[in-house]
Length: 181
Image (cartoon, rainbow, N blue to C red; front, side, top):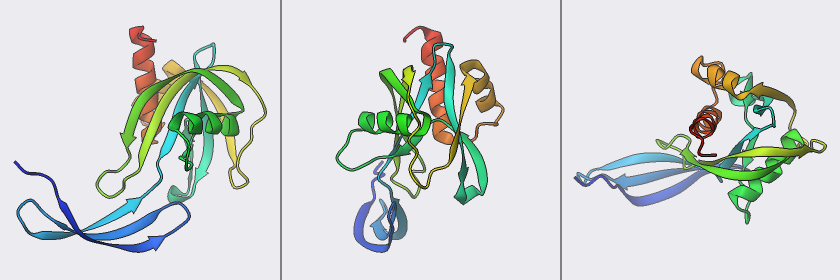
């Protein structure tokens, strides 16, 4: 069965500092056409950073779209001309002051593939040492340490609701428990 859709036209509706919104016309597999609204995003990174005591580093920060404080793993958007690994090392230092080692890819996650092309690259690492936090000028966050087993419970009980954080916490826990790492 043919599943692919072909872009017939694409119009930029909005271009901001982070996202761009396109209104596309696509040809469907049955030959009909449909409108597709697509949010273009540069992508992001997140890391499950573990202390020697198997505590994960989290940040609490206000997330404007939801108007609430959210508990998340350190994360950020991809910067141009840098790799996901370079980005996550920078974000980890900026948000937590931690310097990590033994970075292992946990894969990538399509955030909301029905309308957005954002991909988050996930990692886990161990913490080597701490330096001073270096948050961006518009970034206000609080560092929180949570034992890995407790973080898994929090994901399963829907206390941690951020999708990239849920995925990275569970993947990191599975890899550690299986002895793969």
